Every structure is written in C-alpha cells, then in structure tokens.
Image 1 (cartoon, one colour):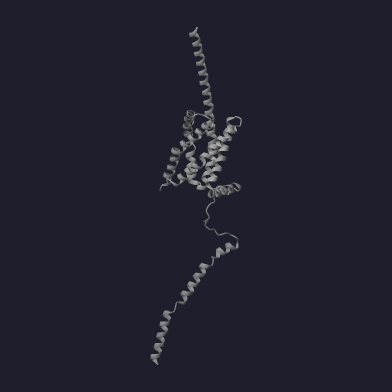
Image 2 (cartoon, rainbow, N blue to C red):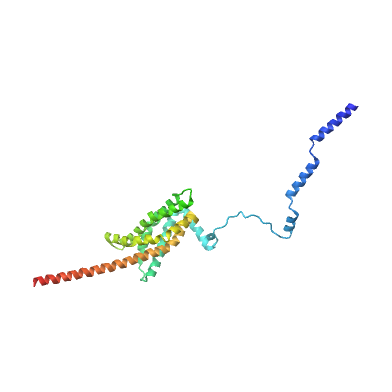
Length: 273
C-alpha cells in the first residue's frame, strides 16, 4: 500500500513538471491583449477625434504635375512621346521654329515675310530628328559613378560638339535658302556662328544641366522647346542683322565698283583726246 502511494505521488510530480505554468500562460495572454488593444490614452484620443500621427510614405508629386490643365497637357505630350517619338519631335520642332521666327520678325520691326517663316520651317524639318537622336545619345552615354562628373561631361560635349555644328547648319541654311552663293554662305557662317556660340554658353549649359538632373527623359524635349523659342528668336534676329550688314556691304562695294568704272572711263577718254 505504501509502495502504491509513492508511485502515485511520483507520477503526479512528473505530470506537474511537464504541464505549462498556468501563471505564465495568464501573463502571456495578458501581454498579448495589451499588444492588440490600444492604450487607454489612445482610445480616449480616438474617442475625442484626435488623429494619431502616421509617418508619410507617399512621395511628393512634382510641381508640374499639380498645375491642372497644364499638367494634363504635359501628360498628353508624354504619352505621345512614348508612342510616336519621331512624329512628336517633328511637329514640336515645327511649332518651336514657327513661334521663334514670328517673335524675331516682330522684334526687328519689319513687315511680316512669309518666306522667312518658310525657311525656318524647312530648317526645322531637317534638324528635328538628328537633334532628338543627339540628345538620346547624350543621355545614354557619359554616365559615370560620379553624377557631377557625368553632368559636367554631358554639358561640355554638348557645347563643344553639338552647338557649333547646329549653329553652322542654321545660319548656313538661312543663307543658302535665301539664294546666296557658297562664298556668301561661308561669309554668313563666319559672321554669325562665333558670336552665337559664345552667347549660347550663357544659357544652354544651365538648361542642359537642369534637364538631365530634374526632367524625365520623355519631357526633356518639351522643356528645352520652351527655352528654344527664345533662343530661336535670338538666332533669327542675329541672322537678320547679318543679312542687313551684308546688303549694306554689297551696296558699298557696288558703289565703289561704279566709281572705279567711271574713273576708268574718264581716263580712257582723256588718253584718246
């Protein structure tokens, strides 16, 4: 009998050692309830309508996307640029050159000349796609681990390689489409390209740097286009100024030739006498 009692007591002791502590379960349950139930102060704040601050994870929307109808216009342009990039660039370039020529003609104070506008549109048609391809190339190359080095290289390459070539094309085509001879075309380039390249350094490096830093690829052309309206106005103005100077120089040279011919005629008649 004593043996049976000892065995029973031993089994009970072993069973208790394997059973989980009831107090521990109660503590865990209480802790879990505390984690899932808001603090009394939080409940009171919610009841009083006080909002609980939550960290913001929504990215800030760019300013140009918050301009109402203007933003929708940008978005439509971006969709068109992604679907039909060449067509979009071609039409955009025509609009930019057209507005730039109208602005330049109004600044010069001359009567409107449709032939000048037509020349500007022809020049635009020839340069729109190559210019677009150039900036695509520039965006895909010269990308180094240093963003500052990449940006500085892009700006430098654009100023050294693209700007003189484009300006030579612009002024050369203006002269050629006006009916000038090849020597006169070369004279126009020498008269206009150096000063235009120097003045471009005051504007386009900053525009290029800003564009590659802050503007998405599909919107860079339209951003540069707004700036280019003013730039085309300046180029058209500079071209018109060169035309006037060349016409005045030819007039002086023509008068000089007439005077020479008159003097030679007088000398010939004197010798005969």
